[in-house]
Length: 598
Image 1 (cartoon, rainbow, N blue to C red):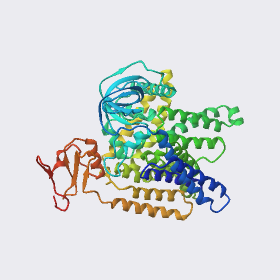
Image 2: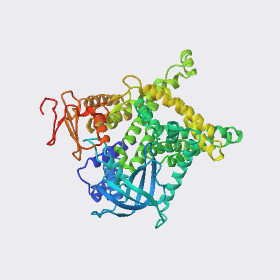
Image 3: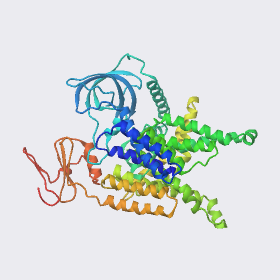
């Protein structure tokens, strides 16, 4: 029953985000507590299973409501110009063309506005972002958080709200450092220390590597992935290797696994320790410490938190002599993540990460015993000797993880990776055996000044990974564009994946039928004939050729890219051909619809 509890808990969170207005916290909390107490009283009754599931739904709803109430803060509703702000720099991102930083506001002065924001995210010229922990003064133009660019598309303002950010903006003029009114707090000092550590690692990598190799190496070790060039970034995602750039379960497993086996091998060299002490448990403890350090170093994003909790549960299971890789392990990790950050449920990294992990745990629990339960004869032994089972497992793991994440990639990014298995088979063994171990050894050797050779080895593996991604991305049909579809087919696909993964009887194949129905449902969704931007500055009309034709008075390349991607349209957002068939004069614009009407 336990693996179904986080499903019900997540269902309650989903209900919260579907609510028309903010629920009343005390009513929601009282209801959840009452249902939980009722489930406890009925724990020896046949009604326990449905009661605890209903209580889990109510608990998820209450936790999401409480989290929103706890972090509630002012959000900018309309643009403000020439705003004077001062505050502490909390985070800094180095990007390919520009830099970004988040300012914790201590003072704000704006004409014709009395709003007092708590945090603002700024974009500045590359190389001009101030240091984390510094106290600065500046003037800026502020904009409200970006709302969805089309109905049903991703809500960036929701992300910013849960990060405590009330506006975004552009700095006007110079950023002036000044004496802070106070120390800024322990959290700010910690952020400054970790940022300094990431910068130090990046500078050491920069001494050996450059360009995309340096950016990818830094992304794998510190989570800072914004400096990767657009062609390489696109090739990675088109080929299906984009998950390598986002620190998640794979990276955490490699870090913990390398440390676990290295420590265990070193301890096994001492006969007295190997015979008389639990060196396996000691190794699991060392791996847990390494995983925790990697979590802090990489910025502790949602996907990384999920990965750490999952890895921690596995390692703790080893330390207390329990079975490590089970559906219960995944359930505990999911409950921890959703309780700490209920907003993660609607984030693509959480959805894709847990879908892939559910598929892999099902493969370990169900697929492997059935696959390899063959009689031991000479042919099987020869295949196993040459690594046949390992190759088969790598193929199956890539295939299942890729299929499990496909509905979410199609929904959020409007594309699939037809050759994802091919790219993962070609690149992931090198990343696992060379790139990540070399990076870990580089971190260990850096204080001694002996890290250069490890960054060089890491660069060789990254060269191979980039070459594989470019080759796969150039194959015919590699760019699998999918038109946008609503949330209902995605919910159906999620239900199908969960049923296939968690049910223990042949009824699990009902999930496959639900999954197939959701695919047909998603592909049959009709695309809109007219799209109008929120500010009215851009309008797209579907013409007789079935493609969008643009009527534009403003310039918003991001919005146009999103519209074209959601329409599975390969055209460039900057081309003049988008306005083909549109006639404009001083009074307005005219263009034909699909049925010929103007």
